[in-house]
Length: 380
Image 1 (tube, helix red, strand yellow):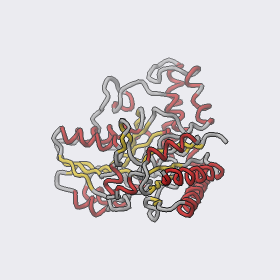
Image 2 (image 1 turned 60 degrees about the vertical axis):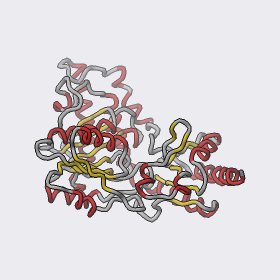
Image 3 (image 1 turned 90 degrees about the vertical axis):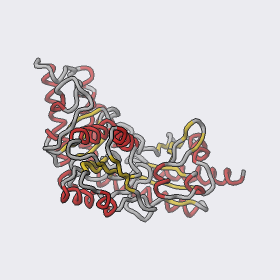
C-alpha cells in the first residue's frame, strides 16, 4: 500500500489537472502580465480569466480579488492593511482565541502599534459565541476577524451571525476561510463578509498562492510597495502559473464538492466510530458540533502526541499534532488551551485530516496501526 497521507489540513496533493493547467505558463506563455507586448498580454489574459473564474465561484466582482503569495500574507494584508488605513476612525480590534498564528501575530503587531485588542474566548467545544463578539464591540472598534473553520479541530464558527452583527454596527468583518476552501461553498454575499482569505494548496492547488477578497469600498494600506499590481494593493509581478492553478483547483473543487464532501464525511465518521469502539480512553474533539467533513481531532488519554506520531510515521502513515513540538518538548495547543481541555487528554492530541483521495483501505490500515500503537505505548 502507498503511504497513507492524513495531513490534508496542512497541505493537499496538487491535482494532476491543476499541474497540467499551470505548465504552459512556466515555459511557453511566460511573459510579464504588466508588459504591453503580445507575450505579456497572453499572460495577462490568462490571469484575468483565472480571476473571473474564482470571482464567479465566490459570487464576487473580479476587481475585489487580490492574489497573494499565500493565506498568511492574505491574512496579514486584511488585518494590518485595514486597521492601519482606518486608525483615524478608531483603534479597537477584535479576534478570537483559536485563530491561526498568521492572524494572532498580525493582531499582536497592531497591539504593539498602539491598538487595543480584544480576544474573544471559545466554549469547551471550541466555538465562539456570537453574543460574546457583540459584547466585545466598543465605539472605537474598526475590525472583527474570525476563522470560518478551525484548522486543528475543524469546528465551524458562527460566521453569518457575526457578519450580521458587524453589518448592523458598521464594522468591517474579515474571515479566514483557508480551511473551508474546497470543503464548503463560499458565497461572500450570502456570508455577508467584507474580507475573506483563501489558500490554493488546501484544495489540491499549488503552494505559494493565496487570495484576499476585499469588498468594494474597503481601503487597505499595502504591505508590499513598489508597483501598481493588483489594483495598487499588492506590488510585485504576479505569479501567473500559480494563479492559473488556483483557479483550476477551485473550479475542480466546486464541481466535485458534493461528492467529495460525502466521501470524506463518511470515511471520517467510520474512522471515529471504529476508533472509540476499538480503543479505550479516547475522545473525539467536538464530535457533536458542526465540523469540517474531512477533520478528525482525537485525544488519547495519558499518552503523548509525539510518541503516537512517530509510531504512525514508522508505519508510513502521516498525521499531525494537535499541539506544537518545539526543541523536542511537547507544549499544549493554544486551541486546546482556549477550550480548557485537561492535560491528560490534551497532551495526546492527534489530527487526522482526509482528502478526496483517501480510501477506506487507508483508514482501516490507520485504525489497525493506532490500535497496536496505543496498546504498546500503554503497556510500557
